[in-house]
Amino acid sequence: LMQNKYLDDFLSNICGFKCFIIISKKQIKKFINIKSKFLLILRSNEKLNLSDIYDFKVNVKSKLIQFKKKIKVEKKIKFKCRAAKVKDIPKLEKICRENLFGSRFEMDINLEKNFLRKYRSLWVKNYFLKKRGDYLFVAYNRKEILGFVLLIKEKTNLRIDQILVANRYKRLGIAETLLNYTCNKFSNNFKFIHAGTYDHNLIAKKMYKKMNFKREKIFKYIYHLYPKNYN
Image (cartoon, rainbow, N blue to C red; front, side, top):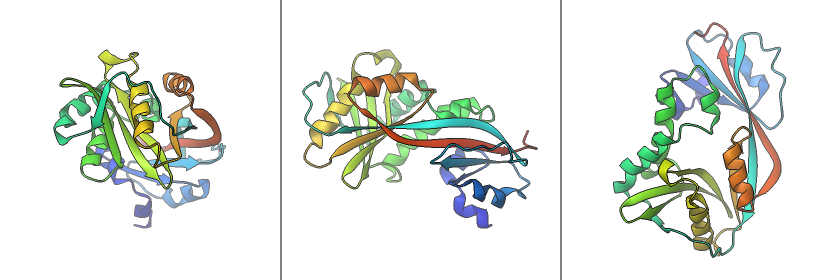
C-alpha cells in the first residue's frame, strides 16, 4: 500500500493497529478509503483548522513547545552519573512505568492504559538495540537508579529524547543533575542542548525554565485523527 511509507512500526506494534505519521493536511486524503482501524498523526508547523475533515474525528490537539540552552560546564552535580548499562534495563523500565503522564498520548481516549505503561519502556529499550538515541545516562545512588536522560545527536547540538525520574526521588534535583552532567561531559563537543515538551505539561515547562533553558519561537502542532467509524 502507498500509505505504508507513512507507517510508524514502533507505535503500531504497541497499539495493536496501524499508526501513520504525516506532516501536511493535504496528505490526509490518502487515507480516506482505508476501512480498518488506524491512527493518523499529523505533525504540523502551523495551527490548523480541521473542522472540514469530514471523514475523521480529531481526538487530540497538542502543542509541542521547544526550549534550548547553551552547553557549558555546570558546577551543580548532586548525584553520581554514568552511562547506562544493559543490566539497568529492569530499573529503567520501572521508572518508565511510574511516569505515565506528560505526553500527548495520555490525552487520547482511544489508547488503552497498557499503551501508556509500555511505550516509554520500549522507547528506552530501543537504545540498547541501537534503534533510538545516541547517549543514555543514569543518575544513581549505590545500586539504585534515580533517573535517566536519553539524548540524540543533531549535528552540533544535542536533543533530549526522554528525561524521567523515579517517583520516590522527584524534587531532589535529579533531572538537573542529569542535565548538568550532560553539559559537563559535552561542553567541548556540542553547542546547544534542545528539549521539547507539550503545552499541558506544566511541570516540565517549569523545570526547563528553572534550569535556564530559553523558550524558542518554534512550535509543532500535533493532531491525532481517527476514522469517524472508529469504535
